[in-house]
Image (cartoon, rainbow over all chains, first blue to last red; front, side, top):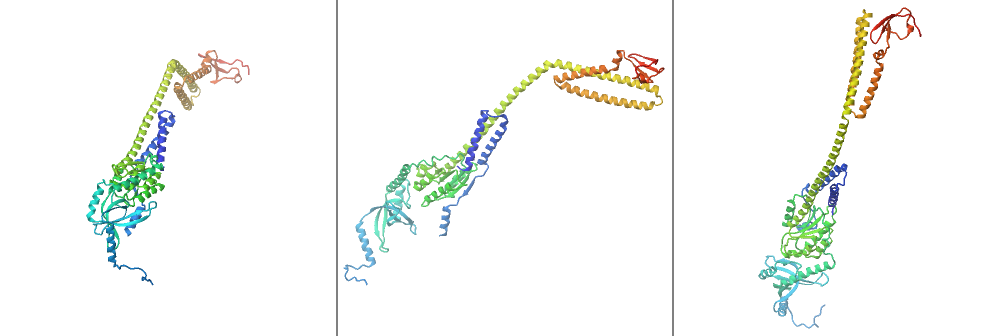
Length: 74
Length: 491
């Protein structure tokens, strides 16, 4: 798993914790706005990871390409 | 010097005679057709593209080493027949290098170059099928024995697959199918392409290299590797019944997804892959669906969050409303119980204060009249000056009165708003002031029988200032008397 996936897993874990705190009303009214703000921020971060960037294709040059250019020289 | 005299020489050959003799011997030994099996190497077409040439080799049973080799040819006349026979096996294999084959052939020698050849007449495709299946079975059994079959399958699939290691031939149909399907999702996938041969002799090393490359890349390490190619014959699929490719997938720390384009047959690569899909498009759909689930999960969490917050806020609001009602009830009960008391106190204060003000005002008016009359009586000549002084005094007094009455008004407003205890204190204070005022009011003193005497309109405080015969004016609570001093005492 790369860094992004770990970040995502952690974000989901934290979101579920906030959600269960809210649903069990195991939360102080003073903490509410902070927790909700944090949750919204996490959701925004995850969504941005998925949708904000354009799809990208990167060609990783390998032995195959080197071999091809070798063939072209022959 | 070579001496041939003691060697028994039977015949002398020209090269052609020799080659023809060997040819005859070969033809007599291999009078008809024979079956020969071996492995195809160096497959090539003739210059005019009509005939096919290759070598048939035999390898050492243990080592990867050629122990025998013979040239072979498929002439134009036999080509179609052989291809048809291969096709009848539903295209499980092609005539290509490295496959094991069994041919029906003649053995012949061409005198012109002296080498002997196999002239292929027919093929036994069942032999090759058996060999392929055998080879495949051998690999599968080995993998099972080593208990590595499910190694890649047991890797957890990343919860969010956005970075993809793509192994396919660049610009192939499979490549375009895969990329366009991902693109249409609108998600921000990052595809790292490692272009590879997907058939032919380089397939094995390309794919093994690419899988290892992705596994050793640091920052750009993909979440999943996709090995894909477009549809083809089963023969092409047999490139993936490959031990080294199988082991590369097995040892990959990144999940490997295969989509090798064959609807029915399954290659060994498919068997050991984390997930085997059919086509490049289906592989892309699998990935899109994966991210879609993540997206929906986020939406669900967001909605649940919203609902939970609403419920929470409603709860708090209800609690506050309940408390507010309690306070309201308490306050209205308190005011109902104390309402009359407060009204009573308010009017008491008002009466006292206005009485005090009125008394003071009338006293001042009396004094002012007295001053006025006394002044006009005694200092007629200085009337103008006196009038000015009177105005001055009056202005000061009325300013004072205004200020005081303003203060009282303010206090009254404040008092009206204050609680019960403050009202009571103010009431007490006012009572005290009233008593003081009553004591100090000279008219009250005079009412009790005290009188005031003046000499030359000056108040007499000490008898020492008087002598026999002085005229005195005495003012009583009501009325005045004029007298003369007979005698003084108590100096």
